[in-house]
Length: 442
Ligand code: NAD
Image (cartoon, rainbow, N blue to C red; front, top):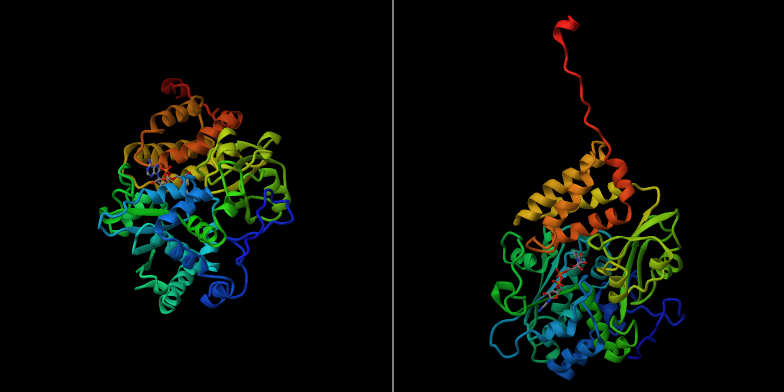
């Protein structure tokens, strides 16, 4: 098919979304609609190329993991052993739970076949004959759509034995989580799939060496698999022309907070925050003071010209002092209390900690949550902010998985940027009463 024209800027009139091209169209989730619009042609192309060439194509495209970390997808796929004779697994991480992130949700519910096709391509490339989609329990509607799409695909010979007469067998299963953020951590997710408690595992070994049931496994985000479908459809060169030198392709950015049109926008990597917030999301509705670039785990940045003109690619956002993460942009108004806003995030991480390691269980779930509560409820005392900083030093880098460090993102950045707000809440003096003189009072 003719590729949509590559673009370098969201303002470019040739802007052509592919991942979200069919979101919102009537019946976009059905196989008939998908096939009418060129569906399952990419996987045929993959079968024609051969498995190794598919991995090379993904490498050449420059695709990086869209779950948040931005790890090179082609490289990750190439970590899977080739002829080890063992069963291989692929997993789609659809446990989208990062606060401020809601891009996968519509891919799942509106275009499930795009994901299934991406998983077929990934499964074929990585010699995996079984795939799992692990979806967060709260996505009930999306889960129903995915399940229906899997059944449709199975009936049409797109899943099961000898897919499209290629000789490749691929089974795909949907697994619903029960609503825990930690299940999005890849090793906790695998424990959960195995029926165990969702505690993270130590890495390394990485999943390609020892993953689900101890066998070679690759986990990718929903958007990553969907991007693979588009790459196999239109070619690696098409993908590599969009974005910046090191961050290629289109990305689903999300905007939440008081802006005119909050939502999901498919734009090339390297689009600036200003373009996303003003040109696409309609601009802020009130004066702002901070911006979270990629989901709550990413340190917040000050709302100023320097930050607004930062291109949203992995390198530039890192240079500005944060992370691109999931591309879930949250804006924080000037009128909001930053300590209260951060407490909201701290409570979330405290609640979601699995409790396996002490720095996270005692540090985040207990101490950090209570310190914030003390400040916000008006009992903050001089020295409390320093205590939070000291605690953070003992938590950071010392927990088993990334959850505790993720919580420190908003904590440390908000203190660094808005220390005066914290200090104003840390002034409560414990009242001292003179000892009563019983005899005199009498
Ligand atoms: P990570 O950098 O540890 O790993 C990213 C991926 O690369 C993993 O699949 C990992 O196995 C692989 N990898 C990394 N180094 C490797 C190596 N040396 N060899 C082989 N494979 C390797 O990051 P993570 O802890 O998986 O994810 C953190 C990110 O997740 C954060 O940036 C955060 O923004 C994001 N996040 C997203 C959500 C969501 O809902 N989408 C939720 C929470 C966090």
